[in-house]
Amino acid sequence: MRSNQTHPQRSRSFDAASLGSTVSMLSGREKDCCEDCGSCKCCSRRCVCISVFVLLGLAIMAAAVALAIIFGIPQRTPVNRYCTSNNMTGYLCDDRVTCIPASSVCNGISNCANGEDENSEICTDLPKNLPTYLIFKCGNPQFWIYIDEKCNDINNCGDCSDEVGILANCPSCGANWWPCTSVFYEYCKCIPRSLCRDGVQHCTDWSDEYKCTP
Image 1 (tube, helix red, strand yellow):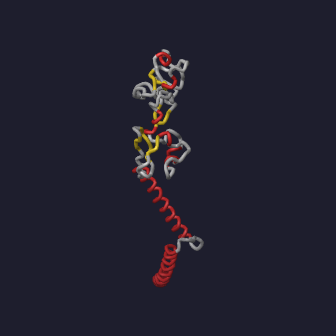
Image 2 (tube, one colour):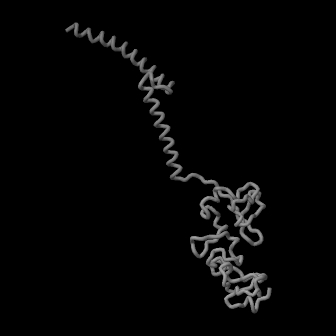
Image 3 (cartoon, one colour):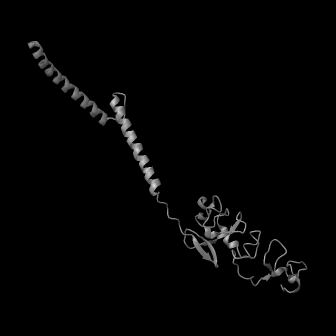
């Protein structure tokens, strides 16, 4: 019984020393893990350390993406390109002075000094990416024209919706035009006076041959 009483004391003394050694060893390894997480070939704890940091990084990235989706990523404020020239709506170049006709935008020719009128951001998937003030939707929604091609006495839409009707809201024929319903596809409610009295019927009522003067 005495030997049984003394043996635990030795064990406690031995275990304390071993425990101190073990704690020191583990502390050293934990220190190594925190100091050197670039390799996991020495200790599995390092692998765990690296994995935790990788997962933490991925979690932060996922959170950033989620916040961007929820609150929206701030978009660049579009530049106002609206301008008028000769009472016609046009496109304002980067110099904030040059105003080119709507039909000069995305026509394959750089009319602005920096070529912004041919930028792929607006010239791809026409007319979807064009500013709405540059286009006119025809009576047939499958067709469109540039706004400066409306009310020019030419049948650009093909159904005269760009020259006649509420949508077009065009003024009366100009001084160089004769008002009548054209028999030819090219014109709508006016014909050029240069066609008057040329021996060819251009108006449904023949007024171009009997009333109109060149």
